[in-house]
Amino acid sequence: MIENLHRWLVVRLLLVWLVLSLAIGGIVHYLGNVRLDDHVVVMAKSETVNYKQAVIEYLQAPSEGALARLNRNVAAHIEHDNLIAVEFYDANSIKITEAVAASARDIEEKLPKHGSEFSDKNGVVCTKMEVNNDTYLRVFVPLTDKSGKKIGYLEGIYHAPSDIIAQIKSQTLWSLVLVVLVVLATSIVLYPLIIRLNRRLVDYSRTLALTNIGMLKVLGSAIAKRDSDTNEHNYRVTLYAVHIGEKLGLTRGAMQGLIKGSFLHDLGKIAIADAILHKPGKLSEEEFSVMKSHVRHGEDIIQGYDWLKDARDVVVCHHEKFDGSGYPVGTSGSVIPLNARIFAVADVFDALTSKRPYKEPFSFAVAVGILQESSGNHFDPEIVRVFLEHVEHLYGEICHGGEDTLHGKLESYIDTYF
Ligand SMILES: [Fe+2]
Image (cartoon, rainbow, N blue to C red; front, side, top):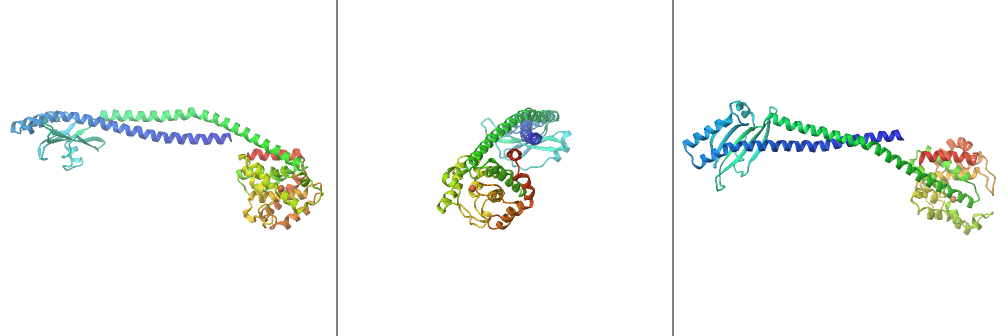
């Protein structure tokens, strides 16, 4: 169980590490890209300022001289700026002049073309492009006069410096590595804490289960004393029922309900008057009617305790018969809960093969014969079939086992299923 827990926890912590690393790493990567874009845009905008003033002077007072000054200014800057190409337009989107750095003519040809879709924008517009693993920005800067009126715009191609790009990418990568390591370290630190907490929880659950099972045994003993019986009947019927349940492949939860129900099946007899419960002779019709009420009394007793709710099927329905002639409801076939159908076979077989104040035990052969005769009317034929396949072995093992032996066998089942 502990090995399974270690494997379970390692797998889940690895999954958590992976998911958190991907999620936080994704955010870091996204923020790194945003930071990179912002940085490049700020640099691109700052370089356009050099040209902005010259072109505004020309647009406010166009002349051959102003254009020549603009061209000289542009030619002086373009060869040593990161702005590798620049074009100037007037308010009607008519190009005034342009310049392309000699080293950038091939690149400029490869960049995506565009129309005049940015000419009516009032703010600075930047679009990012990647060519040959290099980052470029197309920058549109509106040009305005002193009154704020738009008199043209500037379009530039900015080549983002590769050393700065590499530096920012490197910082982002290290941030990613740091995130992955921090999440991994957190998972490693949490591992022993979760194991310790789980051990405490398992111990606590085990103690609680043992307390409940102790209560189950006490109640079972109380019923046995009230019925002038011993614990052995409770042990035997529970062991027979558990064997059938295992052969039928019941789930762990269903087995728990079967064990609890088998132990407490006649709990309601506590509420039946001694005169009826211990009457040596045959019960009258009215007395039998009172006796039958023990299943409802049993239901009333267990329904207040959540841990015993799965015992209800056996406690309430263990006297129902497959053909519908049983009580308290008279349900039939598969409508009767499976645990109750299983228990009915175990209970009757033990009653037949045990000594009672009013009878000697029937022989094994007679008891088996009665089960076979009752298959399909009292009992579910499939359950009788499964039980009879193993009954000889079970009979030898259980019917003549002493209280200590039976208790030991039951303890091993409790260990398995609780
Ligand atoms: Fe009963």
